[in-house]
Image (cartoon, rainbow, N blue to C red; front, side, top):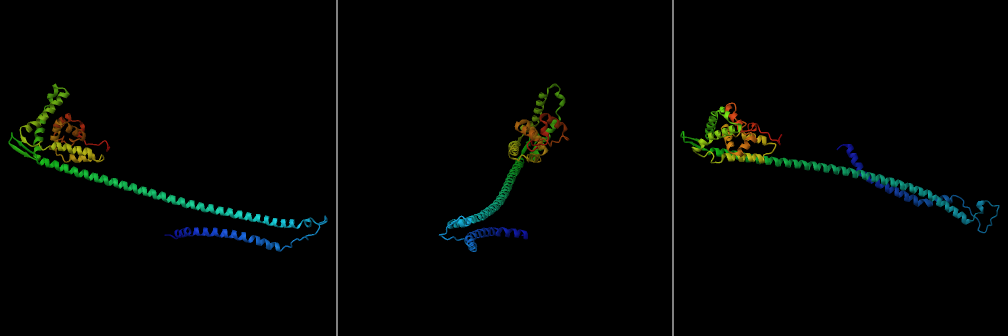
Length: 334
């Protein structure tokens, strides 16, 4: 603590005592003057020779005016002068009363200043308390958002693990070639079969059709490339509800993801889908309207290899809107 600060604190501590003793001294001085004032006047009066008039003296016209006055008149004038003298004392008291009034006003002003300081300090404390409360609310909100985010990603990873578990249960038996496929090999078989058939689709045949007829013919052709080997084999490719589970993951991200993070969450999900899975999803979207909507909404065909499969990519562009092949950008995030 600095020396000036210490001196200021000392003044604050001793100033009320100084004011109290000043008031007591002023009142005592007034009382003392009031007490000694009459005696002082009497002492002054004794120093002057009083004027006496015999009781039986007769006044004549030749006497001076003062000598013609009666004794009672002289006594009245004498003590009337005392009264007039007390008038000057009243003026003194009035001055002291005015001085006390000024002192009281000064004290009130100091009290008001102190009250203002206290109110200002209280406002500062309230402001600081509000700032602390707002900070605590922000911290609580951030903690809540962090916990919700942690909970979201924890569930998302569990859903992705379950997706892999379902793939590990895949089994496909190609009765035509007498071959068996398991796990990711099932996706690879269907992907190669579908892409090969799409490559053999002749665009020139569309000359005699309108656009709608051509689109429906292409859709049936691609679905046939999937359903033919699927129907002729004993397999569990769709039996374990893999594709239904993938729709549930998309619904979970759509409903539970933070609007600011949904773009990255969708991109994260896409990184878990292989190209062979992507080809199968493109075909399943032609069968399932829900899947078709999600493919176009979230751009699930973004990573389709249009360089290696240029012809197949051209055919899929006929069946899906451009958004199906683009990076998803959330309107809310934008």
